[in-house]
Length: 207
Image 1 (cartoon, rainbow, N blue to C red):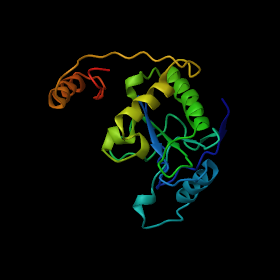
Image 2 (cartoon, rainbow, N blue to C red):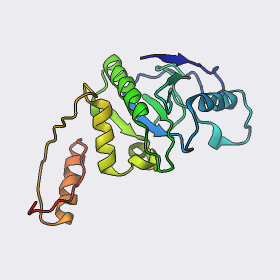
Image 3 (cartoon, helix red, strand yellow):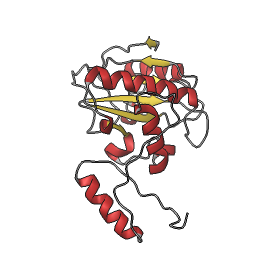
Image 4 (cartoon, helix red, strand yellow):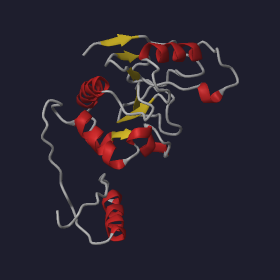
């Protein structure tokens, strides 16, 4: 995988130079349909240069940007803190993903590149699949918006953490079946409390 280095300078706005030990990989979306990786990298560079004083909401960054065509740019080293999820930046590698559709759905080229990037980071830092998360999982922010939906996120999570993106075969583990959604939700709470991720799927019992 080709990674283009566009490292921004250490500054008080979005690259503090603080050392971290990578333990979590967090996936974001840019929040602006059609914005490319180069444009976002330039924006972060301008933030670093102090071009937006008095706008704390602009004091953001990420270690990586994945573009619409699958290009990958690194603007902050893996083992340095970026500012992308308030209260959850220590130990987290943040990845911003560009997109074209207003819904926020990622392009296939972006997903393929994200898969390669995530897999390499997981291997390099011994990060397990359950530590590959969304911004939404860390702070509740609707990011990446299209993948706040649990079914869509489950599919994307599989796509970027499976050993091979080439296979169309998926393997799922079902831990319960219930006649009421309330009981299913209560059991899901227990599963999550035990440290596992999961979601409720509604199916026709006669299907």
